[in-house]
Length: 387
Image 1 (cartoon, rainbow, N blue to C red):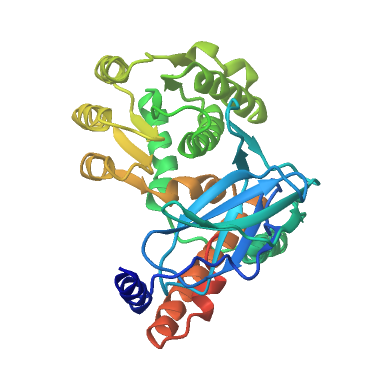
Image 2: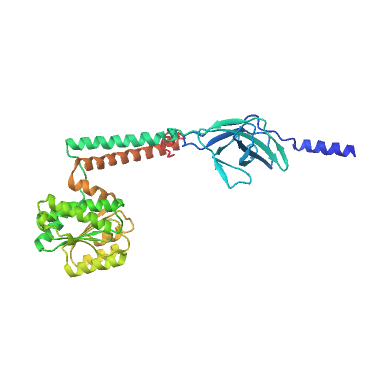
């Protein structure tokens, strides 16, 4: 019988099943580049086999008691070290988990489990979680953002000294033509907002354009109608139009009822405006903002009345409908550039040119990064990686 036991022992040794070993060293340190509340625990890989699990435990004192943080299944020969981010731990028979607190010392050890067998680590590592003032992994974001900001500020300073070139935008050049036609015919101008609220970029751009249109209708003594579907947008539009008439020296010509709420529902809004187009026959329709399915209904109805139609939107799904039914269409960023284009105000003009230069730089970086990555050089790719 003893000979059989010796044979079994030799067979187990031959297949590599031996006693478990605890990690020879365990490190614990504050997790870098965070707001605190996290400690990194790191330890070297030991001789592993299938079924081995590392159990990380934490205590508030070196002698314990220790509470479970996490368990990791061993991956033989996959890596030289293992690590976890400890941000909370579980206390048995309690109401859940407790977080790792800043500026408090914690003690960690790592045990190795295989089935019912365990190798307890005699080594205990200690660390404190701290709030880091800087997240150095995002340094590239700070450098790139600062560089673009300096470019914009430089362009604004340049715009204060001389007029900067902006390519011709046909839809904005046609505004005077449309307003002049309405003045000659003695008919109103209908300005239509999109369906987004005041916190949308396209709505803000549309309100800026409305201010320029209102100044010219005030100067030409042309009736202006502004239709809205949002009460906040209506209130802002009323103030913008009122200010425009005041700047034009015609405060008495401003009519608060000319800026009104047509409807709050999408297709009720479209139906109300189609009725205005058919009944009042405005000479010009100016549609600016973010539009949905009502875009084609409005533009088709307007085209049947013979009005000059100028549309602008950053909704790429509606651009085809405006292009085919309107006389002029501002596409995408042309809508955002409209206020700078019309006013030639240095801050707006400089910001626009600065953004264009920043985009040109990004395009150059994309092309250069693609070429370098093709050659196996990853430096530029890593420099522009977002964290």
